Length: 86
Image 1 (cartoon, helix red, strand yellow):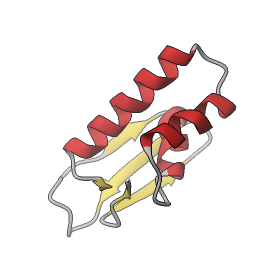
Image 2 (cartoon, rainbow, N blue to C red; image 1 turned 180 degrees about the vertical axis):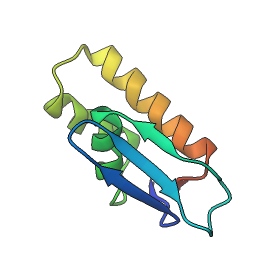
Image 3 (tube, rainbow, N blue to C red; image 1 turned 30 degrees about the vertical axis):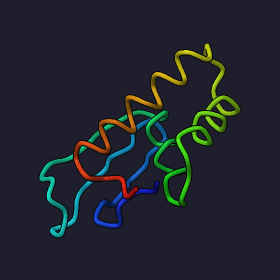
């Protein structure tokens, strides 16, 4: 899976903003934190959910279950708006 090219990502030090292009079915803006930014960065290339979880464990010092839950939730939400290509 990877990020759909119909979505543009803008990152600052604290926030991640995902904006659809006119070609996307979703209309709105997604605002997230540094965690979402790290996930989206990994989605720039074709990657598996398991790889994202493993990379997030290297980046963030958090309980394993929390990282897995956060990654799955973020990916689920991105799927709902069509931001992920399978």
